[in-house]
Image 1 (cartoon, rainbow, N blue to C red):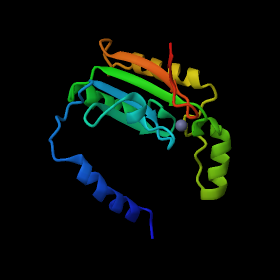
Image 2: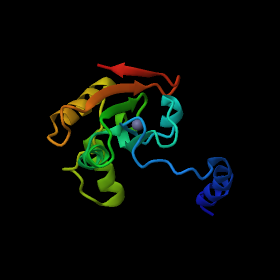
Image 3: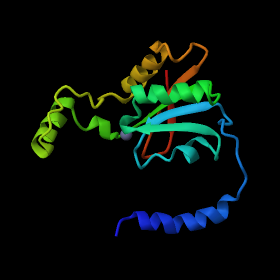
Length: 164
Ligand SMILES: [Zn+2]
């Protein structure tokens, strides 16, 4: 049995609490958040967000990739967001390997050559936030009118600290 069956059971209780109000498709706060997939980071309660409030884009590390840019352009130009928050976190899985080590592992375990692939690992958490904010600022698809902020979430305390 997969864990998925537990999800279907849990969802029955959620539906009872959810109600049937139809929320607008455009996020109420006009904010898009790019953050990590880490299981210890529950973005909505950590930032006081409710259903319909914000777009939350997640991947390994919360890194700005071409597909994140794709989503942000849709978020901004189709769905009215005008602010982006880059939120990385302490003790991130993207800090636990280098591209070289990971490529060796995948060569060994999967027999695949990914030696030219960048998995976007990082060492310094604040540097990674600044790097991703700079990628956004330098993208021709993200206009200067978009407000960009960065922060680090502490997985042990739940505290969010701004990165300038
Ligand atoms: Zn992470």
